[in-house]
Image (cartoon, rainbow, N blue to C red; front, top):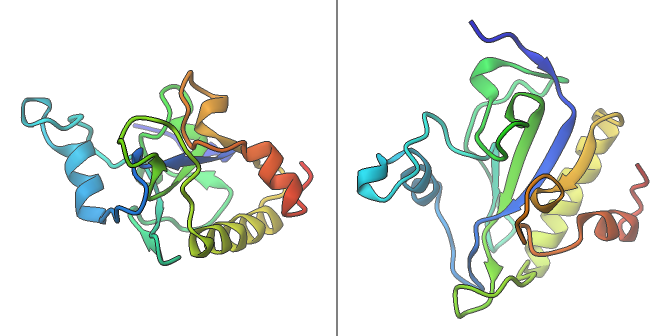
Length: 157
């Protein structure tokens, strides 16, 4: 039986989809939970708790009771080795139109929604470290410098 763990990280991701292309929760579910033979990752659960749409809408992908513990049913597969102590969130985008080159493609609406979410989160959980996926893994994701952005929006951690 999995035991709940103290929440240590809020990890920001991008979907690594081309600039301007919307992503649905169904897309993410398919990418993450479809069998590997069908082009998915074969995971039991999606990788993120919340998805930030191009229009700034925030969609809950995995239920969460909003406390400082990561319950077994809240665990998402965002970063290997860190999932039991992290909440993962994702914005639609993160690469150039070529579909390969990392780029901060956050729309104005996504930036506003992300800022509000992160500030609210930080107020509730000041001890939880907010980081980019690239701070845990050798990846470009989320295609922007999270620590720099946090300073810009007035979060010092």
